[in-house]
Amino acid sequence: MSSSGNAFVEGGRLQKELSYTSEALGVAAASTHQLVIQTPRDLGANILHPAALKEHLAILKAATQVTVHLFDITWKLKDICYALNIPNFDMHYIDQIFDSIIPCAIITPLDCFWEGSKLLGPGYPVHIPGTQTHKPVQWTNLNPMWMLDEMKKLQFMFPFKTLEDYMKRAGITNGYQSKPCLDPTDPECPKTAPNKKSQQVSKQASKQASKQAGGQPSKRTLSPRL
Image (cartoon, rainbow, N blue to C red; front, side, top):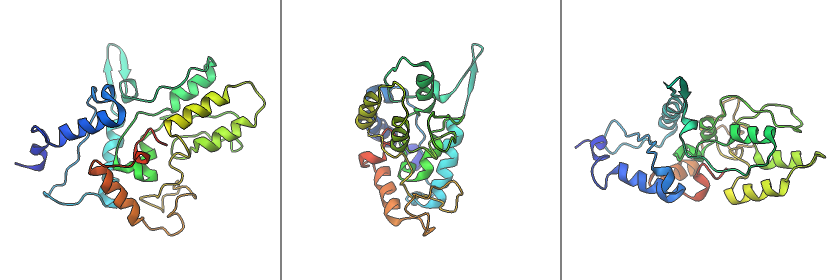
């Protein structure tokens, strides 16, 4: 039987992925069955190398951008995916920002690299009030802790402690800004990436990706932990 065929037998890859999703994100997350299983063309071949991971990125980007028009409404992945619950701040503008910027929870070996942020959007960059750069943000350039520190310097009433506690519980730190880049020559690869200067893909990061694909990732590789 082919590797793709083995995915659907009892105890196969599909069942293992569903079990891991339930363990990592909770039973509710697995109930939607939004899975992409990529297998090598040749049985036993290693697909955890930069070229294959870039192909994986392209596949997932295409999958996350699929829309369905039904009942006069256009549905996107964000409408049905599992995402972290965020506090309601009773401030319409702020709540809109969080609704836009909190991504679908995606578990993938790409989370070991900065390129994993390219899957999280948002589709339209978000303007965060009080930032010095005034540059709209996406997860590719977002450092949540730095952003929070900048916002705390502003003199306006906002429950920063609630937001800070939420970020700590969710494991949200500096996003993807300190993760290595699969392609360090990418102009968007942040200067804070450990391999930006060397222009080399870290072997250690590749091992981390391999570890996650084997079903034993560290918590820092999960998309809710940013």
